[in-house]
Image (cartoon, rainbow, N blue to C red):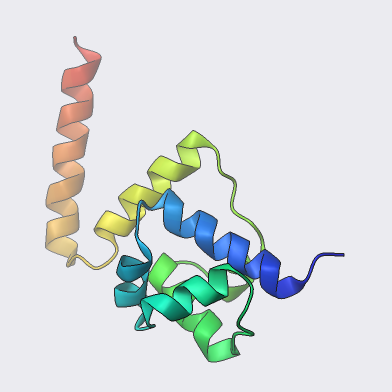
Length: 111
């Protein structure tokens, strides 16, 4: 059985890459140092529940979900990237971005 810290590290790395984030960007989003992120991803550090919670908040998911590896499918990758773009925006900006995306989608459909 694989070590839980290695599985967690692989999950964190996959989620970070799905979002197109660097370790620095994940560190900024979570309040953790980028080198600490690297140690987590390599399974070197045994993370606390607080750290797991900070990572979950940064990814916009739950701590339990991080313990499961994400589906690396292309649809999931785009959904994760869009979620990351919208996550910290106020409701009004989210509505504008959604409207813009919907408009672009309709335009692309008519090409």
